[in-house]
Length: 219
Image (cartoon, rainbow, N blue to C red; front, side, top):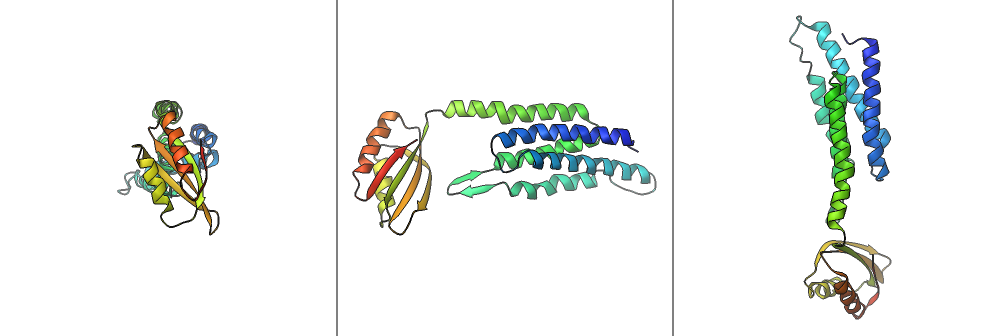
């Protein structure tokens, strides 16, 4: 049986490790932050401790599987992660946060069975992935994506004209979002991939020249 002191220590370690990962997610303003990650890690740890205790209490008396409860955590946390995934237009967000919730449940299970070294090193690698690799990714993509905010009349074929204008420069649209201000006007947010500043200036000038386009801003 896992002693009470050991149980408290394992839950405390799970609290700290889950908090570290959750703090990083919250600092990035993600849907699942500090409290969510702490609760998932604590819950997974407690389930693992409970699983071990139940198995040891009936060991030799039945064919109990100590991994059965833990297996339900691994699959069940997927429903929680699914709640952080959102699709906006062609863009899917929240996959990384959903993955962090899943892996933090694994950290909790590891702590729950006393595998401290694996839990600590996994937490280190998770933080390295979320923080350092994010900076590398941003550095790699710097200057390659530009967003145009276009306010235009809500006319039939207007989006097609705007797309043709941009396509004439061989620029690819990575993402497009539309917000109808009213029946007469709408705002388009276009993310352009791999485009230099000189092309942006030319594209902006040609977009303004399209009948019905009220304003074009880049950011």
